[in-house]
Amino acid sequence: MNSVFVTGTDTDVGKTRISVAIIELLQRQGKRVAAMKPIASGCELTIDGLRNDDALQLSQQANVDLPYQLINPYAFEPAIAPHIAAEQVETAIKLALIKQNFDLIQQQSDAVVVEGAGGWLVPLNQTETMADLAISLDLPVILVVDIRLGCINHALLTVKAIESTGLKLQGWIANNLGHNPESIEIVETLTQRIWAPCLGYVPRLEAHESAADYLVLN
Image 1 (cartoon, rainbow, N blue to C red):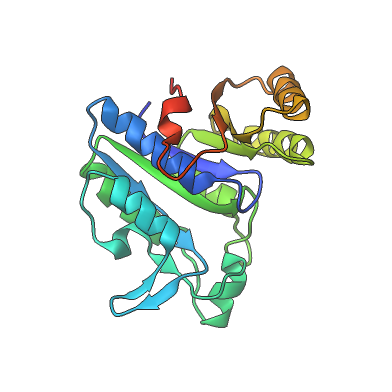
Image 2 (tube, rainbow, N blue to C red):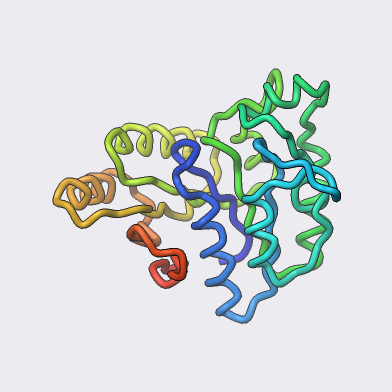
């Protein structure tokens, strides 16, 4: 596997942790791996400008050194939906700019891990969503599913939405998997209903543990 687009069933499902783990696993294969977080809300103002913690985590794991603005061209301070944050600062999110940055990053690396924001159909502007961004980059998709109440419906709807675009669903990852019977039953249900393979069963981890140890990329 080379470049990939990481999406989730919702916000706060562990996309960044899994994206960092994918970068680490690709690095173990001897690849030069770059990261990209094209759009990020909830950024903090620093002496260097707005910075997003997720983007910084991705950048720190990557072994291709890139300017922050190339990794995260759209950074917004309010922790709200990207299109609303962009409107508040009178900025239009343009997929062409993101694609331009991605092409520059791809030229300098063996693989690029691109992390989306929120869920698959989060609006980016008046007409486009996160799905349109993935389509413009033409990348296979990995879906992160946080194993919790309600995730079955969210996961299956997201899978259908991804399939409708014609993009390849590379696989899905069960994140924050508990040891209780309900969690195991949820994973079994999703495995029966999602044709793409499960690329990892990631339990709740301590800070020093790596999710990469629980992933198998194909």
